[in-house]
Amino acid sequence: MNVILVGPPGAGKGTQAAVLEEKTKLKHVASGDLFRQHMLNETPLGLQARSFVSRGELVPDDIVIGMILDRVFQPDCSRGVIFDGFPRTQEQAQALAHALQLHHKTLDAVVFLSAPRDTLLKRIVGRQTCRTCQTPYNLYYNPSREEGMCDLCNGTLYTRPDDNLETARHRLDVYMAQTMPLIEHYRSLGLLHEVDGLGDVHEVTARVVQQLGLASTEAEEHCLTQP
Ligand code: ADP
Ligand code: ADP
Ligand code: ZN
Image (cartoon, rainbow, N blue to C red; front, side, top):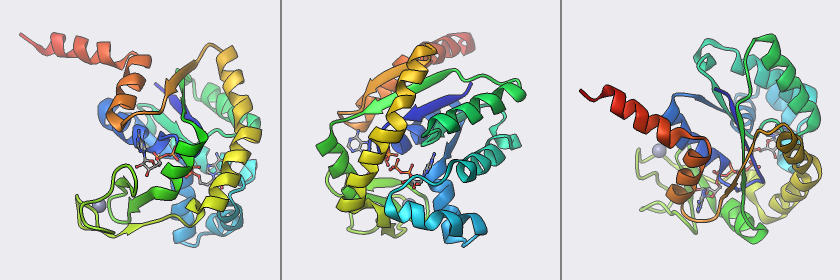
C-alpha cells in the first residue's frame, strides 16, 4: 500500500504520518525531513536545497524527485510508503506515478488534510521538534512539560528556521499556487480522501483511519487472531 499525505504546511501531515507508521508498518518518508538531514550533513544535495528551503520556496523538481525515488525503493520501504510532503507539483506527481508503475506498485490513496489559515500559521510558528527523537511539540497546542526539553528523551527542542511568520505566510502562498492543483488531479483519479485537520491529534487520526478503511482491517485482524 502506498499513501500520500498532502496539505498545507502545518496541516498535521508529519504528526499523522508518524501515527500511521506505527499502526500500519508502512514507512514514513518526509521530503522536508530528508532535506533537513542533507542540510545538517552539508551534503551536495543539502547545499543545493538550502537557499530554497530557507526562503520557503519549493526546491526544484529534479532535485526532489531524485532524492525521493532514491529513498522509496530501498528495501525498508518494500511494504509501502506514507509520502509526507511529496509530491508538491504536477511534475513530481507524474514522476512518482511513472516510477511506481515501473516497479509494479500502486498508489492506493491520497489523504488531503486541511485547516483554516490562521490555525495553520499558529501551528507553524509554534512548532518545536526534538533534536534527538524527532517528537513534535507545539508551544500553543502541545507544549513540552519543561520548556525546551523533550518529555520522552530529555533531548533539546528546536524551532525550524523557516517556521517564522513571514516565511510561513510565503509557504502557504506557494502551497496555494503550486500544490493545490494536485488535489483536483487526485480527485479525478478517484484517490482523494478529504480529512478535516482541525481538532486534537487523536480526533484527526480517527478520521484518517476511517477514511483509509484501516479501522475495519484492524478489527478483522483482531478477530482472526482470536481463538
Ligand atoms: P505538517 O507536517 O503538515 O507541516 P506537523 O505535523 O508538523 O504539520 O504539525 C505542525 C504543528 O502543529 C506541530 O507543532 C504539531 O505538534 C502541531 N499539530 C499537529 N496536529 C495538530 C492538531 N491536530 N492539533 C493541534 N496541533 C497540532
Ligand atoms: P511543511 O509541510 O511544514 O511545509 P516540509 O518539512 O514538508 O514543511 O518542507 C520544508 C521545505 O522543504 C519546503 O518549504 C520546501 O522548501 C522543501 N520541500 C519539502 N518537500 C518538497 C517538495 N516535495 N518539493 C519541493 N520542495 C520541497
Ligand atoms: Zn525526544
